[in-house]
Image 1 (cartoon, rainbow, N blue to C red):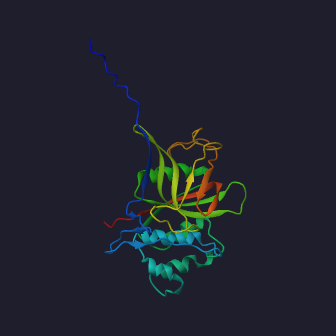
Image 2 (image 1 turned 60 degrees about the vertical axis):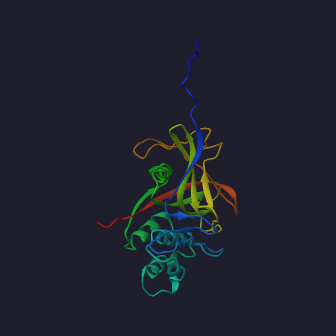
Image 3 (image 1 turned 180 degrees about the horizontal axis):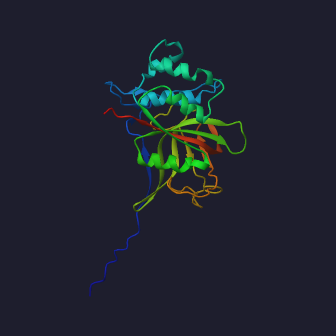
Amino acid sequence: MSKAISLNRPAVSYRFQRVFPGLLTGHALTVQTKRQEPVRFFMQQSDLDGACGVHIAAMILAIYDLAKPSALHEMSHRKSGVAATVWQAFQHTYFSGVNPEEWGELMDGLDLPLFLTAKYGMQDNADGHALEWLMRGGDLVALAFASVKHRRTKHWALAVGVEGAAVGKVHTPDTILLLDPSASEPGFAPFNARLRLPTSGPGSRRAPPNLPKPSEDGKRKPVHWLYEAAEWNAEEVRLLAAVRLQLKVAA
């Protein structure tokens, strides 16, 4: 007598990553633009400046092929062109830093073919929007975040991807992949830092974070991310803003 075969197989589980298309990994991270050869676009800030916002703005323009990286490296000496315009807009923030609202205004004022969508803090569910945008893929997201324990750490980084767990057809993101200008240029990887939901505490993966869809309303609990990079000790942070930057397509 033949035995019945059960079709209730356990769902396949695995980790996944989704990264901005066009980024090419190798000894140095590059992006394929209209030029024949891929170009290096990572911009690293110094220990003396507070120009993380300027650096991620420059990386965004280089990735979208709106300015040459070589020109952006010399923006303070340029007299004309996009690089000169960036310096004229951001130079007053080079040492003092820039808050999320002003960063968005300065980027919008560059009059470039970019469409910005900004969400601020818990009231706008910046966490949920950032994850949703990155899961869709194809767009860059600028993130501003601050330390949970003290006010000394306020920083900008560029989100280029997302990572998470997949069980069957359900994909649950739990990590945002970053290009952080305060860290070293990545090699053989598309990111050099990350924001990860911790395994315990507010917003942990053991207790699913309160990250409703952007269309949902209601009170939300603060989400604490664990910032991790090779150069720095892990630190709990909260998102101040998430700004999606989309390249406008000419009609």
